[in-house]
Amino acid sequence: MLINELAKRTGLSIHTIRFYERYGFIQGRRNASTTNNYFHYDEEAVAKLELVIDAKSVGFTLQEIAEILDAWYGDLYSVEQKRAILENKIGVLDERIKELRNMKKQIRECIEEL
Amino acid sequence: MLINELAKRTGLSIHTIRFYERYGFIQGRRNASTTNNYFHYDEEAVAKLELVIDAKSVGFTLQEIAEILDAWYGDLYSVEQKRAILENKIGVLDERIKELRNMKKQIRECIEEL
DNA sequence: ATCAACAGTAGAGTATAGTCTACGGTTAAT
DNA sequence: ATTAACCGTAGACTATACTCTACTGTTGAT
Image 1 (cartoon, each protein chain N blue to C red):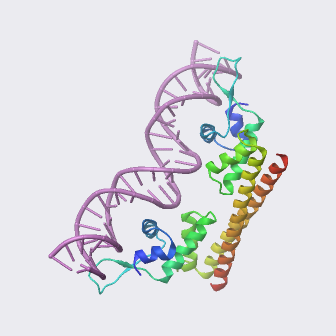
Image 2 (image 1 turned 180 degrees about the vertical axis):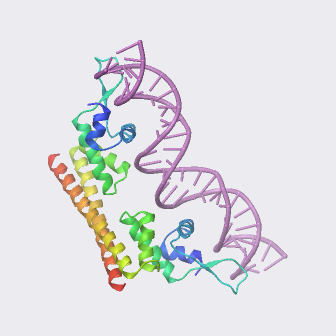
């Protein structure tokens, strides 16, 4: 699919997708048989971008998301290293959930004092 | 206390505290009896900054934090309005906790597939 | 008296994460 | 054949949230 369809599939703007491509999250491929220089994207690109959207919404930075994608799709790491990276991210999420619960408690206490 | 002590109490840098003061989170008071123009801060300033730190760590923007502080310390709103603002923030936190749990599940599934 | 350590203001600079504009080439429908 | 809708690149611009620099005045210890 071309970038326009990828944008429609993910809900991201074309600008943002290009930004993410420059950032390294996805790579389009040029079709050798055609004369134009349009990039083509596959289902993996959709899956990656959906992951980016989810990861962003829980507060991961693009840098952290890059690490997750590397551990998920990349071949830079051994299975054990990948597991370690992902377990670490789960730890980050657990920590964040704890902070959120604390904040809720604080706000609830404040409501009671109103 | 002066800004230096406030920085030590909260762990924030003096720069950041001044930035937050310009932003409207806290207000120092000048002591009329002294010739200098140093600002003095009270315990409320410490409490507010600690709240800012906590609220930031759960992903609230400075704009949202300003709303929370207004509902907590301000007198712009009625008690009912304040309660509504704070209940709304709790809703935001609940939503975020849900997203975090989802993300954890996704990462766990990925670990299993490694 | 002087000098380090602190106070204030104004404004410039940085990082992150986009967002947009200008430009020129391509494709598909009329 | 032409024109709207698409594609690509390069680079400028924006918002958020700091962070730092320059400059000047104050305080407290020696």
